[in-house]
Amino acid sequence: MGEMAEFPLHVRLFMKGYRWRRIDPVPWAPLLKPLAECRVALVSSAGFVEPGQQPFDDSVRGGDVSFRDISSDIDPGALIDTHRSESFDHNGMQRDPNLAFPIERLRELVSQKRIGSVNHRHLSFMGSITAPGRLVRDTAPEAARRLAADGVDVALLVPV
Image 1 (spheres, rainbow, N blue to C red):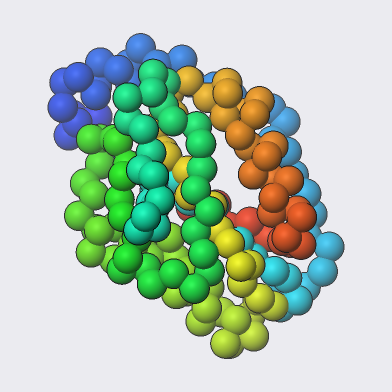
Image 2: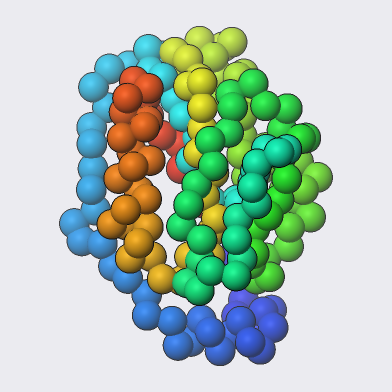
């Protein structure tokens, strides 16, 4: 975790004035079967897209609340970083996309029989959504419906 002083002035000013939201109570769904029998999907806010997919639109005021399906058989090195935020160093996730989209780690967990299977698709969102109303109202429920239709038992959230 960085110190506020490490951020550029415009980021510090934004953070100071931002209206942080609190979700209370936090939604919770208990795991209904052993993890070794569960289908798992990644949900990342790294802003990754696959080659040929439309990048996230960094001109949308409050942030682009859309998401991209990422195929389970993607080579993580092919993922393209379209995250708009300047408040973190992108070098790590560009060098090793598994830091922000740990698909290879999920594949290893399947081979070790620690999880049952990896879903055929995963979801990539743009982080840095400063106006999350549309995300909460429209996008997140649609994303959840898709994963539920796929039979996903566990969504591994990977915030960036």
